[in-house]
Length: 324
Image (cartoon, rainbow, N blue to C red; front, side, top):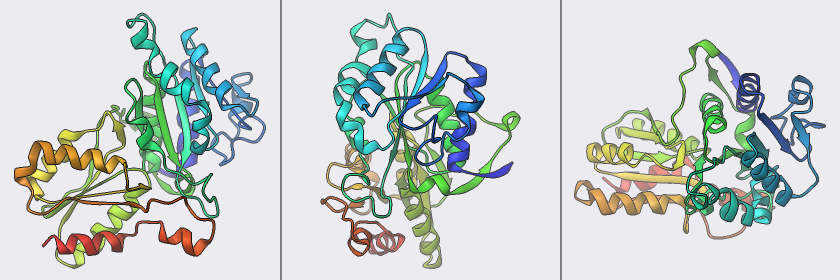
């Protein structure tokens, strides 16, 4: 085990998979020349000549070209620069990438990984700080993942690249610099898309999150422990298909559920979790389900206002204490 950053972990994943399969290539804006806007591709172009490609500033081309390459037998990894820009190529995502395998009756595969840096970043403002994962969990035909730490960042990216179905890989912009323990290649345990992790066991309340939301979840669990409340924390990792069995097993044990994500609360993925738990194990709940997310507004540029859109561990602690 050694300590590396989230960005380094994704770079390792790319290099290992590209070494293992020469059909894998990467393309996006400024990834060969600059190594990516967050340095997540730094040095990859030198290690894999002609397999790390800079593209025009055209998201439509990047996804459309990736779809065509996947149909032709390659395993492309395409970079969106910022997840905020996916709106430009939505037709290629939800009408082509997501539907092709179904439309062709399973006669073809779509091994395409779309990397999408998302979430709040200081001063990013309304067009560069969005968390848009809930758009894509509504689309049949794509898998959606959002790891929260360097270890999962590496293993989930490797699983995405190996998948024969399209995967949208959300990687939080702030998390790129976060460090964590990641095992050497020989010690790695493969990740199965669709599996959540219980990162902290507890008996009094279940807190569910993913991506950077895990910071609030784990921070709240630590503070609650000082209040005598033992929280269980689940990292979903995969949002589509999500591991509802893991969540419901926890709720049946703790009888309380709190959900947190960085994205806007209205229509956020937390609503899907809450609705499913309410439909399938309502009788186990001893308190109303709590949901936390950003307010329904664009992300402001001003630091003081931007700060008010963030969910904090204290927000969760205050709400969870009222459950008792």
